[in-house]
Length: 95
Image (cartoon, rainbow, N blue to C red; front, side, top):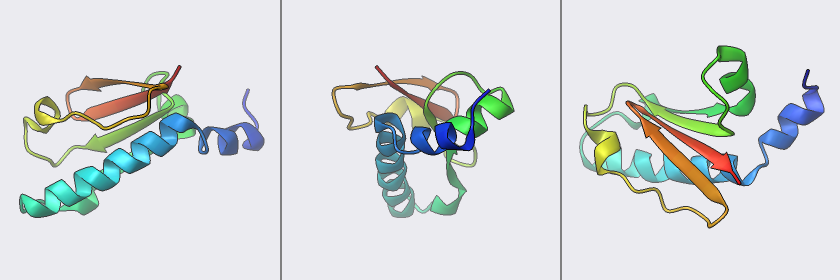
């Protein structure tokens, strides 16, 4: 079982920072395309585990985005970050 300290450490991980950077870039793109950027969310590792959403370190979700938004993206990430795309979610992992 994770403690509060563990959850806070997860929110300082490289994957969480990459997800945050990506979400900000996605919000800017959403504004330019006339979409509501407020509907873009970041899930922390705690939310991911407690919600049963998988085992990634962070996720960016845009449920109200265009249907094909995940097919047209390429997150700019550091070398120590992996990501996967599934429907309206981009999951980030620290190697």
